[in-house]
Image 1: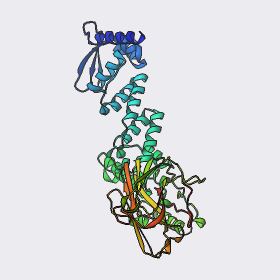
Image 2 (image 1 turned 135 degrees about the horizontal axis):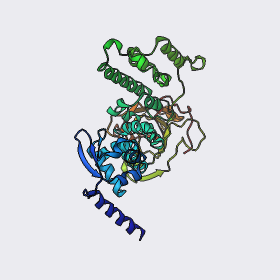
Image 3 (image 1 turned 45 degrees about the vertical axis):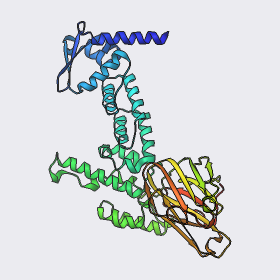
Length: 431
């Protein structure tokens, strides 16, 4: 019965919204100056801003027509509908403009509804916009959710156009996080791209000699880039040519790569980014010549095996046995650069054997070869890095580049996004 009463109330309020004969105020909205006949009481009852405007000491309290030039007719129409009926049905592109209007006019209930909708439709293309808007409106819970999404999809997010519109504070918030899943060199290049965009925007408003240099624009952000996580080759070939990192700092980082235990910090961050993932997948085994297909689904594990470890960069562990080829599928994997460590133990024979590993339809990025003695003890070999977009991906392992049969008797895998991670030599992990 209560639900029915609510429906009747909404219907009557909707009729009131369309009854222009008894309207006592007209909002003239946007540059188009479109007229919206409304009722003062409805607006004042739900918004302190409108209450002050319509019944306070402001001049709008004594005029029939009130201009609202800073809001578009479309956004005002959606906001008005919510104020009369308590319901709103908007397209994803309208969520943030309506949310900003709700913030401007102190419509907290509408603002919360828009925040929920924004959270539901977040993706790699719009999360930067969501972060910017939620930060400006101090919607801390939505800001937190945006940052969590960026953690797992950073590689795609930093390449979006919306990333360039983030504030310096938002960029720093991202770079400060230990849980960002991305190659550090990609974060560095994204920050440089952001800085160049800001400089280009400034040059449209100021004379060239008054526009700050790139190192000045990035002065507050660069200390949060963890240069020590960048490979020496990338430091030389990518970072140094930008001329935004001092030679002294680069020398300190290069020295760290040689003797990490003997290097002073000098303002350089050496702390690794932690990359925790929990993913589910299936490992399929084939017997000789494809006979006897067996499937195994392992429970998700945030860390390697059942062992205690401080390294949270492990995605998942899988293993295959019994002279088989295998495919390992992970679902909903975040975008990032992945490495696969493969540990093999050869069959007790002296034959040469070769095995390959590859992601999806990419070329083989792992090759292991044995003369019959190399894999008698656990031998870990790391794959070449492979950039993967967000989604489901399959690791194929076998004696052919496409994941066919192989002659290794036992193998174990570690999937990780941490280029610095190394398994313990000669050690197998408890599955």
